[in-house]
Length: 84
Image 1 (tube, rainbow, N blue to C red):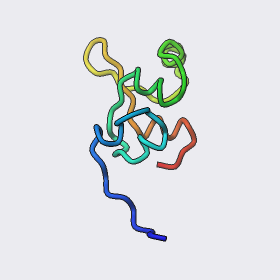
Image 2: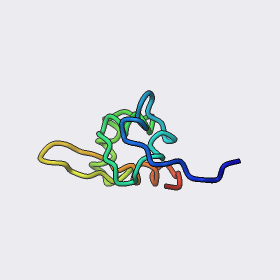
Image 3: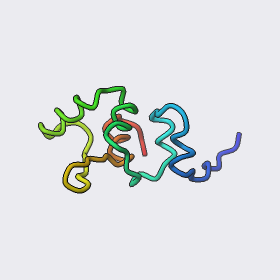
C-alpha cells in the first residue's frame, strides 16, 4: 500500500463531478467555496446555511464584497467533523 499523500489537485479537478466531503478534502483548506457549493457538500439547502449564518451557527462564513458569501474548505470540513 502506498502511504505517500496524493499531490494537491487544482480546484477544478477536485470538484469535477459531484461535490462531496472526500472531493473537497483534497483541496487546500483556504480554498473558498460558494454558498451553493457548500450546501451541496453538506447536503443542505442554501437557505439552511443562510439561517444558520444569521444565528451564528454552522460553518464559519466569509463575506466577499457587499453581497457574496463564501466558506473555506477548512471550515466545511471542521463543521462536518472531518480531519483536514
